[in-house]
Length: 155
Image 1 (tube, rainbow, N blue to C red):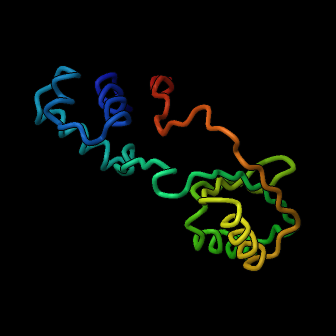
Image 2 (image 1 turned 135 degrees about the vertical axis):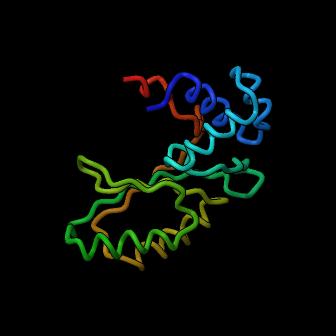
């Protein structure tokens, strides 16, 4: 499991993964080499999956967020595989979940405007048989973070 030192390192990396290892070590009370070893170990264990840059959606013309609820009457494995494959072909889909309840799938889609969403929608429904597709446009982003809570690690 992860100890308090690992959690502190992860908290720093979630906030700024470009911070030099020496500075991370200084902040958590470790010298550079032991800090680097801990980071490498967490990467090898898959705790740290990758390090990325977060972009401003408006500056890359992806400022419209659409939540797409999908229901289907198809539940065979072959259809599920085709659907999962089809969604991989859409770079606009930035999150993709299989849900419980009345909605089978939920997508988070980012596009420049409604016109581009309409093109996405038409390509989506042409690519796979769906029973119902419902779209909700986000009016305002109140909270967005990629930082995961680390308090549960100790349980």
